[in-house]
Image 1 (cartoon, rainbow, N blue to C red):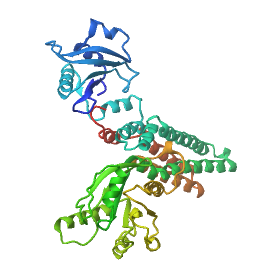
Image 2 (image 1 turned 30 degrees about the horizontal axis):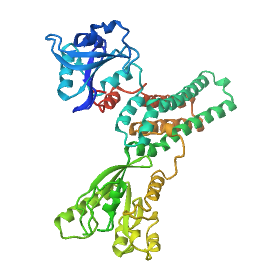
Image 3 (image 1 turned 135 degrees about the vertical axis):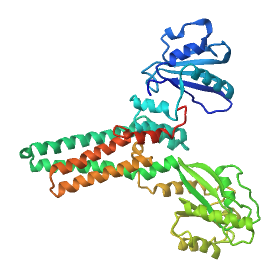
Image 4 (image 1 turned 60 degrees about the vertical axis):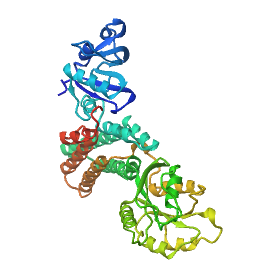
Length: 460
C-alpha cells in the first residue's frame, strides 16, 4: 500500500483564494512532471526542488490544455509530512479547477487517498506517533485558544514524551524484577524497598494523568450550559449579552422563546455550548408546550445550568419549585435586572434554597458578567488541576488505556506486597508496558489504527 502514490484535494471544497491538490508517494514527482508546465521552461526536477515553489501551469498531458495557473510545491523525502516525496498543486480555489487537476493527477497513475491516509503514512513512516496524529484532528477541531494550545502541545510530542518516560521507568523496573527471578540470592531487602518505591512512583505518574482527564476533555469538547428559568426573566437577553450580538428575540411578552437556541462561546478558554431555552411554566399553547418539553430535555444533558431569577419580582414560589427539580445539577443562580430595582432582591432566600453560587447581574448593562465568567471557570475545573497542562489527557481512548495500565500496576503492587513470586509481578508489569504502547501506537492493533485514521478528512 505504501508503494502507491496517493492524491487528494487537501483544502475545503468551495470558492476561495487558494485550493491544494496534494500527492504523496514514489511517483509524485514523475506525475507532476507530466502535468506541470513551468514558466520559462526550467527543468525544475533537476533544480534541487525540495522545499521550493515553482510558478507555472497545470495542463492535461495529452491535449496540452491548460487547467489552471498554479504554484507547485515540492518536498523531497524524507523531509516531508509523510516522509515520502510530496507534491502540492496550489491552484485557484475554485471547485472546477481543483477537481479537474485532481482528475488529471489520478489519470497519470495516482490513486485517490483514503480518509487520513496522508497522516497514516506519516505514522507508519515514523514521522508521527498516534498521540501526535490524534492531535492533528484536535487542532482542526479546536474551539478555543486553550484547546488549540493543548493540541499543539501534544503535536509537539509533550504528552508522547511523558508516556515514553513512564515506559522507560517500567522497562527498568521490569529488568530488575526479571533479574530477581534469575538471581534471587542477590536480591536484598533494601533492593525490595527500592523496587516498591519505583512502582509507587510510576503509579503516581499514571494517576496524575488520569486525574487531568476531566480538564483535558473540557478543553477539547467543551460543556453544555443551559440558561433556564421562568418566562420573561431575561434568559434571551443573557444569551445575547454573552454572545455580544442579538441572537435571540427579546420582548416583554412571556413565552417569546419557543425553541432552543444554541451557540458556542469562549469563556476563559473553555468552549461553552450555551443554550437559551423556553421559559419553564405550565401552558396550554401546543407550540410553547413543545418548547418547554425540549427545555426539560436540554436540562437533563446539561453540564451546567445558569438559572435566571428576576430581581424586580424577587425569588418566587415558582423559582423555588423549579430549583427543587434541579437539585442534582451543577448550577449558578443569576439575579438578573439589577439595573431596574434597588429593592431587596431576596438573596437570603435564594441562598437558603441552594448551595450554588448566587450572582447579581444585568444582561442589559453587562454588570456581573465578568464575575459570571470567573465563576464558570472555577466551577468547571473546581480547582483540582493546578499544573501540568502539557500532559492533560483530552482523549477518551487515552483515558481508557491509562485506566487499564493503572489496573495492571495495582495488580503488580498487590502481588509484591503479598510476597507472590516475581514472575507474577513481571506479568502485570509487561501488561502495563504493552498497554501504554497502545497510546503512542508502538503496540496498537491494526483495528485501533484503522479507527483513528478513519476520523480524518480525505486530504489530511
